[in-house]
Structure formats: structure tokens, C-alpha cells
Image (tube, rainbow, N blue to C red; front, side, top):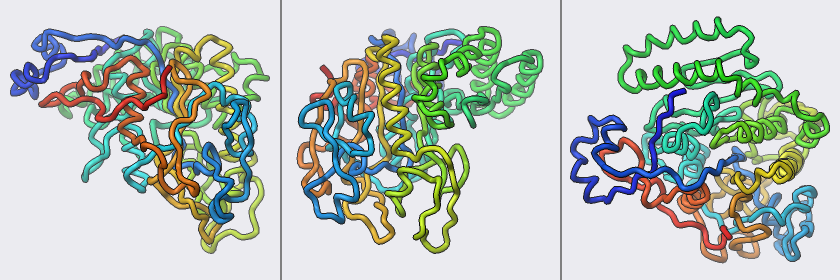
Length: 462
């Protein structure tokens, strides 16, 4: 397998600027030779990034406000957890018994209330400028910096995409996009930006290899396409010959009881698949974890937590059509659990599973959406986009367990303590993975640009 190693760069800024005039024309090996110094990340931790696309409500998850007026606190009560003094939404009873394994950041604050811009901000750590996303998502950058751990297992996966509303590789181009696993994890297709390998069981390897011939046409489309062709070809051959992916993606190898605990549906099985991929050697797995149904449609990729209407119905179940559907909407039934019980099942089981396998200390788990939701419930029984306040959860690695970091005011409208933004979350993720975000620079840029502008969140790590 091709190992494209783009390690941590600790070259002083002045030295980098001295060779900066030639960076446009240098490939990475020549750049490293010119720089004269490169260091790999100090940690070999992996990350599972559970992206709650659409923006989960902090009030109905990890920051309930029982003392707020009724139009703010909502229909559900807080429940006490196994950590004295920490309460979360009563609809997360399984997570309530596992809060001693996680840290919750309650003073999270974004900068943009749009799905595209907000998502690109929180998954890369950089607020995109007008014209679209430039900097890559976390997983794509980690893949570029560190390469694959194991032959036959790509560094970064998206389940089913990494992540919704974003352009994951940014300026790095298609060669460093995630390998997306589309559809139902029980019968998935493995896809890269320019390459599709199906069926996943790889029975007909000769037919699979013939697909690579078509990639030769990419040579005629410029340097980025040529690089993608070369990288995808090498990775595809490794995927087809090592057998590692065939084993990792075989969910039938798991005990039925464990699969049931994750949830015998597309959404729960994606979280189980993430654990198997990390165990097989993936560095970073991004899960677009949102159930599709109700007012949002019947697909399997574009699920959302974007509950502008009927929040208290939609978060629990899409099985039965409410009586008060807003005019102009159609209800799409889905028999499985809604977003909230699905998150409770799959996340709690993931933490148990990682811990029982000795993987939790080596796996960072991040759970967040692109923004929070408005304090006041609207006339349609939902909450709207709200970047001014929200919450997120982290676990694993050296994350301080049983911790609550920061707080919002009585009504959940603004942070009452120091706010922590997407830049700080980015710096914290890289720190957990052993990457110094202030001394590590984006590869192949004309001037040294640190991979994060923020600070490691105070109190997050032990």
C-alpha cells in the first residue's frame, strides 16, 4: 500500500519562509528534504467523530435547564447520573449510567448558524471564507499527516459520509478524501472519491481490479487527479489483497446480542462498524449519525437533527404520524428508534465495547453537531439554529472522565463561563492524537499555516 507520510513539521517559521517561494512547485518529499526536519505524531491514538448533523438540541441532551420557564425547559425533565451533581436529559437513561466515562463541554459556542458554514467550521476548526471550504476536515488532515497504520486499511473512513454539508478533503483534493461506506452497513459499498469497490466481500477480485484501468484517464486531468489515481490504485490493490477490510466490515462476526445493543438498524450498525474499523487499524472514522424519517424523508444518508418542528415527537420516533404536521409537509415512517434513543443505545454501547476491549484509552470519541438550538421553543414545537450556545461530549484517551466543563446561563442562551469554540475543539482533538497544532503546519501551502488557531480546552485532559 502507498504510505503517503506527511508528518508533523516543526520547522521554524523564518526557515520555512526562506524556502516559501519554491513551495508551489515542491512535492512533499522535496519539501521535507528542504525543511530538513520532520517528526511523526507522538501518539498513535485513533478517533471516532460522531457528527450529529443538523444540530442536536443541548436542552434535550447534555445541558437541560429545569429552572428555566416552560417555553425554554421543554417537556422533559433532567435525570441524575452516576456522577453526583451531573444531570442530563431523562431520555438518555443509558448514558446517564456512563457519565463517569465522559467529559461534557457545556460552554461551547460557534460563529455561524448555517448548516454548510457551521458544519465546515466545526469539522475543520476553520471558519470557511466566502467561496466554500478550503481547509480539510480533521480525519482527512490526520490521514495526510500520518498515513495508514495498517496495510489494506485506509486511514480515514466516512459512515456514510465524512461529514454532511462539508467538503472533507478541502484543498488537499480527492486523494485525501475519506473512504466512504455507503448504505446499510450489513451490505455496504466501499467508496472513495474516484473509486468504488463493490461488493464488499471481494469475491470477484479480478473484476474489481479491472476498475482501476478506468482511473488511468485521470492522468489527463492535471496533477491532483494524477495523484488521486496513483493513491487510489495503490490503496485499491492493498484493499483487495490484504483481506483486512473484508474482515473488518463483516458485522456477522459480532455476537447478535452486541449488535442488538448497538441497535439492529442502519444507524446503530454504523457505530459498531466504526469500532471494528478502529480495531482493524483506521486512524479516524467520521460518522454522520442522524436517523432519517418523519418530516425529513426516507433516505439513509441525509439524516438530520434539524428539528424546527415537532422536536419532541421526532427525536423519539418516526413510527407514527403526529396529528399536527405543519402544512406542506409529508411524514415518512421509520420503524426504528428516533435520534435520541438511537444515540443513547449506540453511544453507551460503544463506550462499553471500547472499554471491554481495552480500546477506550487509545480511542478518542467526539460527539457534536454544527450548532446548538434556540432556548425558546417555537410555535411549531421545535427549536431553531443557534450557534451562540451548545454542548458536546468527549471520551477516551486522556479525557478527564466524569467532568463537566463550562456552563451556560439559566436559560441556556449564552455561556456563563469561558466559551470554547470550534478552533479550541480542533486544538483539543489534535492534542489528544499527539499532534501539536501550533507547531504542525498544513502540507503544501505557500506559507506555514498552523493546523489550528485555538487552545486546548482547560480541564479536558487528565
